[in-house]
Image: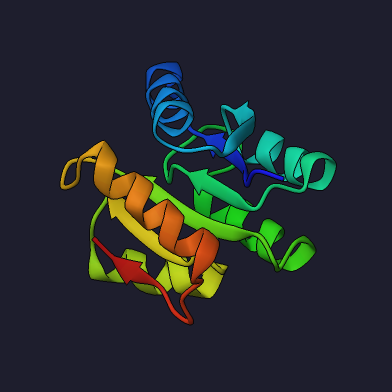
Length: 131
C-alpha cells in the first residue's frame, strides 16, 4: 500500500505544488489537503496518514498547535513543517510540538522536500532537524 500524505497549508498554490510533485515523483498517495490546522487535526483522525506536511502560519489553528494535537492522537504519524519561518526558537517549539523536521520554503527546492519526506517515511529521526 502506498504511503499516505496529508498536505496542510493555507495557500492553495502551495498545496497544489506539493501535491503535484508528490504524485509525479513518488508512488505515494496524497490522501487529503487542509487549509488550516483545525481541519488537519480532524483529517488525521479520519484518514490516518503516514506523513503530514504542515505550514506554520495558518488561520484558525497554526501548524504548531495542530502538531501538538496530532502528535498526541496519532504519535506514529510523521510531521514535517514546511514554512517561510526559519529560526532557532522555532526549532525548539517544533520539537516540543512533536514535529520531526522543519524545512524552509525559501531555502530548498521541491526535490529536497521530497527527499526529506522520504527520509521521514522510511527512517524517522529521533529529533527535529532544520534544512
